Image 1 (cartoon, helix red, strand yellow):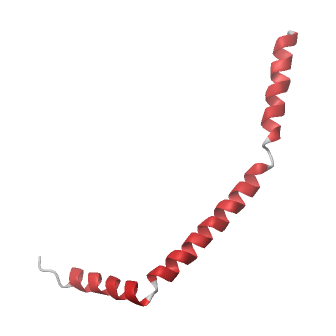
Image 2 (tube, rainbow, N blue to C red; image 1 turned 90 degrees about the vertical axis):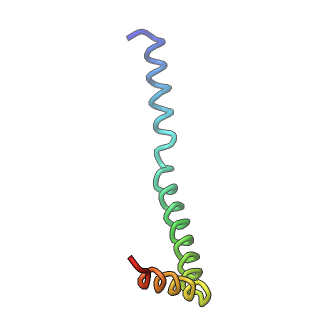
Image 3 (cartoon, rainbow, N blue to C red; image 1 turned 30 degrees about the vertical axis):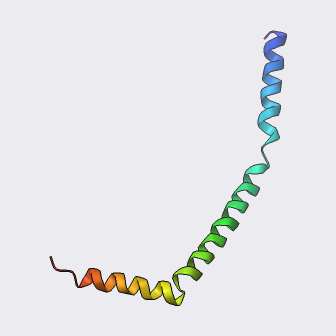
Length: 66
């Protein structure tokens, strides 16, 4: 293997290893964000006004003529 090819290979391996530890923290932040969004959505959907609207939509859908 010539010198240039060896340098490219070493550079590529160093570049790959540099980001090796970031995957776990990215997954953790994604999970925290998803849980936060789920809690916010749960609060909105279970609020009185939204619950009444959803029940109204379901009642209209079930009583619709075919």
